[in-house]
Image (cartoon, rainbow, N blue to C red; front, side):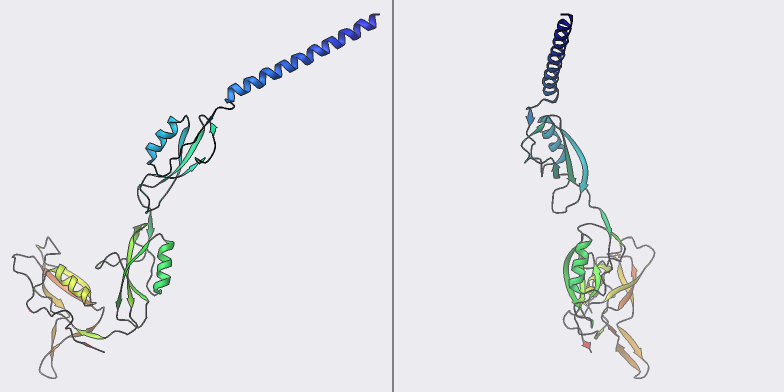
Amino acid sequence: MSNFFKNRSFFFNLIMVLLATFAIGLVFIFSLDMLTKHGNSVKVPNVLGMRYDKAIEKIESAGLQAFVQDSLFYDSLPRLTVVAQTPSSAIKGVKSNRIVYLTINRATAPLVEMPDLRGFSNTSAYFLLKSFGLKVGSTRYIPDLGKDVVKEQRLDSLTEIAPGTKVPVGTVIHLSLGDGKGSPSMQVPNLENMTFAEARQYLLSMNLKVGDVVLDPGVTDTLTAIVYRQDPEREMRDEVKKGTRYTRVKYGYPINLWLKANTGPENGNPNLPQQGKVETAE
C-alpha cells in the first residue's frame, strides 16, 4: 500500500513540474513577443535623391534610425543627396528603431592627378581620362605628323595642364591633336603695342605659344600690360642681302614677350597681320 502512495506522489509531482514548465514557456513566449514587438513592422521610406538632412528627418519620423556610413561622388547628381540606402524601401517592413544606412553624394569633388595624355591616340586619351573621372572637352588640330595623336592637354583655350597636377573629378580637359601634315613654317607676327591678353590670344590663333614673359617694374595687371619687345622679332637683319627679312618659325614655337605698364587708353597694333593671311611655307 505504501508503494502505491509513493508512486502516486511521484506521478503527481511529475505532472506538476511539467505543468509549471509549460506555464513558464508560455509566459516567456508572450513576453518575447512584447519585447520584440512581433507583428509591429514599420515601412522603410524611400529617401533616394533627397538631401541627407531631410532624409534623416523622414527616416526618424517613421520610427527608424539613420546612419550615414559612406560617401561617393557623382558629378551628375546634386551634392549631399542620398545615392543609396540599406534596407531599401522595397522591403515590406522592418522592426521599429531599425537603423537605415545611407550613402550620400560628396559635397566637393575628390582630387585626382592629371595623367600625361601626350603621345596617346584621341581614342586612348578619351578612355584614360574617363578612368580618372575626367571628361574630354573640345579638340583642335595643330600641324604635326602624328595624325590624331594628342600633342597638348589644356584646361581651356589658353592654359596647358601639366601631368601630375591635382584636378577635381569631373574636370573637362581640352585636347590638341596632330593633323598628320607635319609642321610648316610661318611668319612671326608683330605683337608690339598689343596688350598681353591680345597677344596671347593672337598667338594661340596662329598655333604659336607664349614663351617667357618679362615684366617691367610697375606692372600690376599682366593682362592689360603692353608688349614693347618680342623674341624672335617680326623682322631680322639679313647681312648677306644687306636688308631685312621676315622671321619664320615652325608652328608651336614659343615667342618671348617683354611687358610694360599700360599708361593710356591707346592700345592696339596697327600693323597686326590679318588672320587667314599669314604666309606659310612647307
